[in-house]
Amino acid sequence: MTTVEWVACATAALFGLVAVFQVALAAGAPWGRAAWGGASPGRLPARLRAGSAVSAVLLLGMAAVVLARAGLLGSGESTLITVLMWVVVAFAALSTLANLASRSPLERAIFGPTSLALLAGTLTVALAA
Image (cartoon, rainbow, N blue to C red):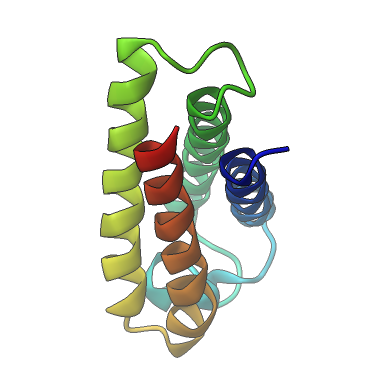
C-alpha cells in the first residue's frame, strides 16, 4: 500500500467515524453539546437530528470520493472525481474553521482536531493522487 493509499484509507475511516457520530445524533443520542455549536445540550431537536442524518450520508460520500481519488475505488483519474475531491477539501477547510470557532468547548476540543486531520488527509490525497 502506498502512502497516499494509506492516507486515503485513514481519512475515509475518520469520515466514517464522524458519520457514525452523526447517525447516533440522528437516532437521539444525548450528545448535542458536542455538535451543531452546542446549542442543544442533550438530545437534538428534530430539525438538527434530520441535519445529522443528512450529514452522515454526505460524510460517507466524501469518504468514497477520497478512496476513489486515491485509486482504491475505480481509477481516480476522472475529471468528476478530481472536482469532487477539491469540493471535499473545501468542505474540510470550512469545517475546520467552523469547529475551531464553535461556541461549544466540547465541539472545539473534539471536532477541531478531527476536522484538521480530515483537512490534512483530503489535501494530501487531492495533491498526491
